[in-house]
Length: 287
Image 1 (cartoon, rainbow, N blue to C red):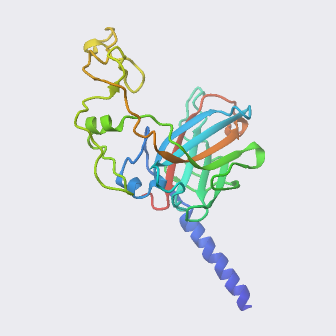
Image 2: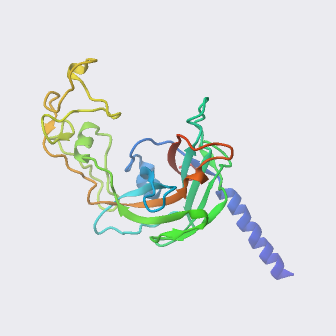
Image 3: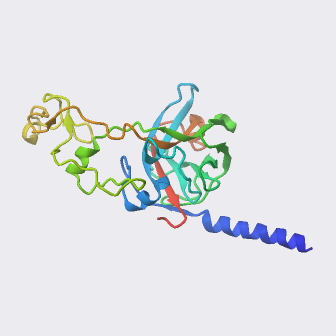
């Protein structure tokens, strides 16, 4: 009887912890991140750098989602930083873009979290499935399977998943960025706390004076910024004329990569069409 009570008490304790810690809250972020706040500097496992979506060239009919996080893993740094089991990674998919009345909330979610803390954990994958809640607070959906660190795993229903280190594909000249936007104060928590700035920069570098200058949407700037004017060039805007430097080229990131059949990304009764996709990291406290 005592053994039964101890077993039951253990089960109840685990159940209470599961309820208490399965409700995650996330904060919005846009564009490439790479240490965008003191919170993610302190816990780089929360720091999503970029997200990529593309057709699976090896499995026709599948789509690949790649969420990169834990930026700036450099030479001599650990290739497998300590994972935080309190961080929930989510890929959210809004399938209502192509309807007559667009619905921009998530209809499908894919979730991933480390099962234990440490440098070599296993991970549990949840979904794809309809979310239990939408917006910034979420609970876990149905389990799809588990995968070890740094090893491609085939799950059921045609899903393949990988969690491990990869080269950071992002390109940015951080020296120029930190001069133009001095609040982007890069700090390496493993080495020093000095900002990486260069006073010579007044703009991003361009390889030639004839290079066109475009805004973040890809729209070219025009001379004097007048509508319909000729496209502005790096020389006409007084930009730095030299080859840009990809500051993140020596660095790696951790990647959550999952290949999923497209048919699993459409709610019942809907047809394949345009979708909106974003990724979040969440913690039980939302911080």
